[in-house]
Picture (tube, rainbow, N blue to C red):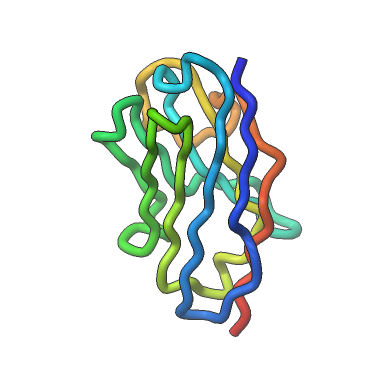
Length: 125
């Protein structure tokens, strides 16, 4: 079992930055692929980024590539999402998620086993 708690959301102007954090409980944190998803009002939840167990491999949605960076610190059971050059279309609730296994290139939210409660990000124009 893994419990996830996100933080760091807020209101920011377009072009600004935010850093989201996800605190994970559980002794086997370093055996989970970690991902970030987001859901805007009236839209389906969409994949944002994923990171491998070791942190050596990352994968991004095309819409955030070059602007967002996912990272993890297995010594602290933490995952981060650094978001730069934010756009109004990045406005959404951002969720941290964990999945067993090693494959990080699946964008389907259904393959993720554990989810946080989400943190709101609002980007004003």
